[in-house]
Length: 131
Image (cartoon, rainbow, N blue to C red; front, side, top):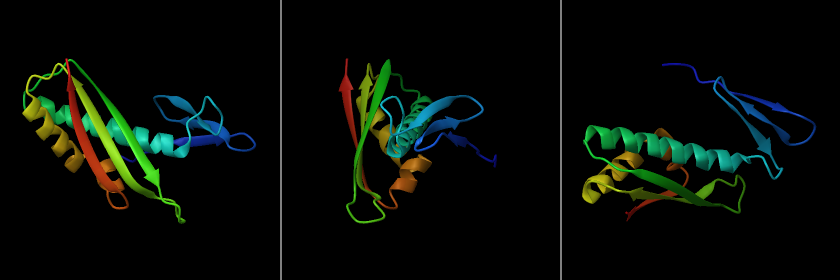
C-alpha cells in the first residue's frame, strides 16, 4: 500500500498552506483559507463521489453531472467530534434512478472516509435527482 503524505507550513498564528505533490491550498482562520473541518468534510465529499463514480461505472450507469453537499454538527463536549453528518448527492441526467440510489448506498459502505467518520458520527445519505 502506498504511503500517503502531506505537509503543512505555517506563518505565525494559524495561517498556512497544505502542500501535496499535486496542489496546495491555504489553510487557517482567514477568509480565503480552509479550516480543519472544511477539509474533513471536503475529503468526505470527494471520497464519497469518487467511490460513487466507480460503482456507477461498474453498474454501467450514466449521468450528466452531480454535486455533493456535506453538513454536520460538532458535539459541545471535548473532544468536539462530529455528532452527525449528512451527505446529499444531487444527480443530473441519471440513466437509472434506482441504480443511482443503490450506487450511493454502496458508496457510503465502501468510501473509507465515510466509514472512518461513521465510528464517531451518525451518518446519513440523501439522493436527489434533477434534469
